[in-house]
Image 1: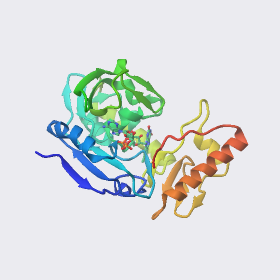
Image 2: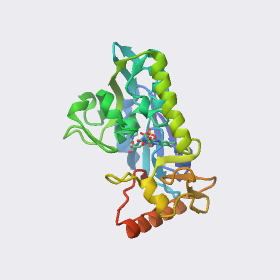
Image 3: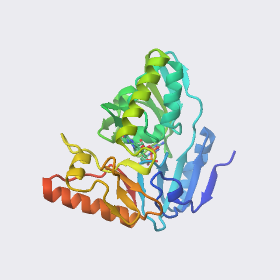
Image 4: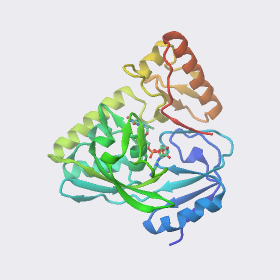
Length: 289
Ligand SMILES: Cc1cc2nc3c(=O)[nH]c(=O)nc-3n(C[C@H](O)[C@H](O)[C@H](O)COP(=O)(O)OP(=O)(O)OC[C@H]3O[C@@H](n4cnc5c(N)ncnc54)[C@H](O)[C@@H]3O)c2cc1C
């Protein structure tokens, strides 16, 4: 089957924040065979390659972007072998958690409510409530145009706060599959932990709004949300973008928002927090410009 390519995909339709102009092209990669054509597609495209997962951590600018999107969509039913679970990087975390609930496998429950793909979660080392995806990761299968597909052990990679780097010399790979090492548990107990996490998030985060999750990283020992709140940014709007009333670190598209408004709000917030508290906020959201 030929690699599926479309021209000028709109990033506002591919990101949860709903912002962004047209990229040059998008290659949708569903099966291993599609990877055979991907290297050629990248070199022929003339654009900057960008691997796209669920688009849930991205703030794309509204003008045309010279990006070629490599959309990883190899979602399928995860495969279980004992306590090990293997799945495609295109699998959404909520589907993975649903599988874990039914299979009675524990370890990922704290990641409930994160809407991204497994590949994006590995690339960001996504985490919440003290758990990071790396904690349950055993191996990942990577792809680069030079090497094709190959497995690496998670312990040979470097993970930090919203940071992942593959073993040295690997370049910037696409994550194709992940293998998790989990703990057997009662399905009901796994389900209860997932529910508890979701209930906690629903009470404190605007999880149904158009956002990219937390826009700033928490500075060491501090909460970015608290700093933004104390600096007066909770609920602060500019045009149709605004910091959530529920959680000051969530930037929300209220409908028809623009990237210029989003970036101005982020800049203002950074400047005020720096002036008031001497703390430099670092972006967690990835800006595509
Ligand atoms: C309501 C909401 C709640 C959120 N809560 C949390 C939270 O609690 N904790 C948290 O950490 N994040 C949270 N996020 C942010 C986001 O969901 C995570 O960062 C997620 O891991 C991003 O995954 P994605 O597939 O959407 O990646 P994308 O946004 O598509 O991409 C993010 C980065 O990952 C790279 N990437 C994506 N897929 C691959 C791949 N297959 N191979 C290589 N690189 C890839 C991209 O190139 C980019 O650099 C939240 C977002 C929303 C909207």
